[in-house]
Image 1: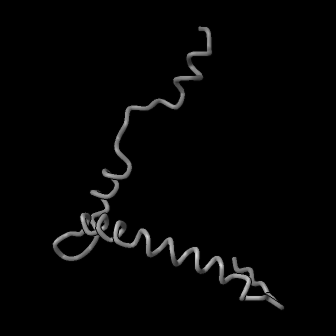
Image 2 (image 1 turned 30 degrees about the vertical axis):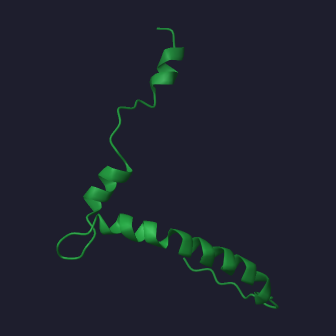
Length: 74
């Protein structure tokens, strides 16, 4: 599905402040992001998705239904 929009009379100068905020944020975190991603690079230059997943989303013991089950009197 494709939706198109015809934007007219946009004042792109109004977006310059947002661009500047984004540029400052990018420059502030560029080194940290680069260093972090470099720790996940394989010998062939690709990113190791499994290593990223285990670092960013550690396995935890969780039961989303536990609070509900505690409320039910059986």
